[in-house]
Length: 151
Image 1 (cartoon, one colour):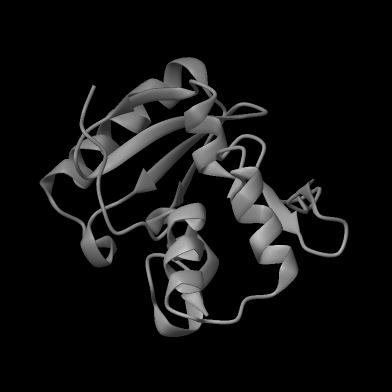
Image 2: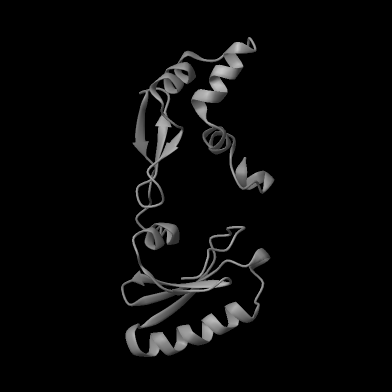
């Protein structure tokens, strides 16, 4: 639903954001019927998603446990690399991230992926850095809607 409606958060991410335990308590007070597994999750203080970008997990209602989010062998998560400290440099428009295997990533995070002076400057810096320390440059976006604070 998040992708289909271009939402920043999907329904269960939004539920986590407002607080599962608090919202379940309010729904029960208002007489809203909830599945038992949701009540159990709320009582345990759990959430639908956990683990951050490096080790994302989701709550599996059948097993009543957190499970690792599937990660394909050819999938690369820039957010996980950033969380692991692989940021080489960043500004409001773009980040340079060590992707491993000799590749430097230019992650664009401007609104609508526009090429503003920050992005163009970071691409120029990427060339200078890659000529010294990397074999390739990959330009990508994670389609986030907000830019990180520069370091």
